[in-house]
Amino acid sequence: MTDDDVTVLLADDHHLVRSGLATLVDGADGMRVVGQAADGEAAIALVVELRPDVVLMDLSMPVLDGVEATRRIVAAEPGTRVVVLTSFSDTRRVGDALAAGATGYLLKDCDPRDLIAAVRSAAQGHAPLDPRVATALLPTAVTSPVDRLSQRERQVLELIGQGLANKQIARTLGISERTVKVHVGHVFRQIGVSDRTSAALWGREHLGDGP
Image 1: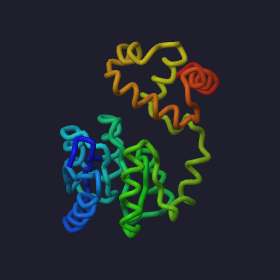
Image 2: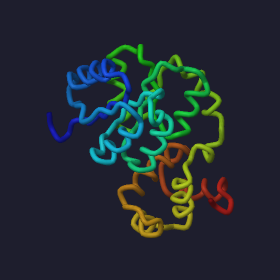
Image 3: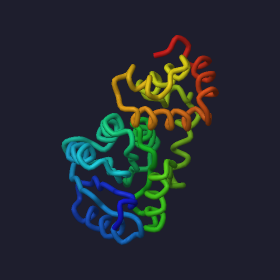
Image 4: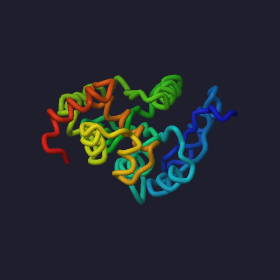
């Protein structure tokens, strides 16, 4: 293992599932499991402590379900990517998970090679999606990008529109510059722009008076 390995946290209430996933992930080149959680609250605590690159998140767990755990993880550690790994492929489940901030959605019976590829893809900032749930994603995909931005991301976009640099945004919102950079990258991907000028123009057109 090296410092460049993709670090992964497993969140699933079934020990056998976690054990199998751990064996698979640890056996992949450049990837290692750094923690395991049996419920949503434990997953949040471990993410804050360990700051993994990727969380493989089950949706159905005790104490706190995967959707709410995802929402809190994304808010607490925006640099951690959450990939849902579940048995559910219905529209509501997919939509809820993605709205909570999950960047990927896989089914548990997917090919192990596809799972490893998805973890790598998520760590690189992409959004891996099992083809079998693509149709469930369509209703979310056609909603306004504004609806897919969190309140914090809207604030960041509004401040970009005011011409503030990342350091100034961090100071204004009371968050770290690293967190601002993560938010800016996610905003750019969500609204389909590649530079601050385009983002500012988009924000002025779609946010109106701002959040």
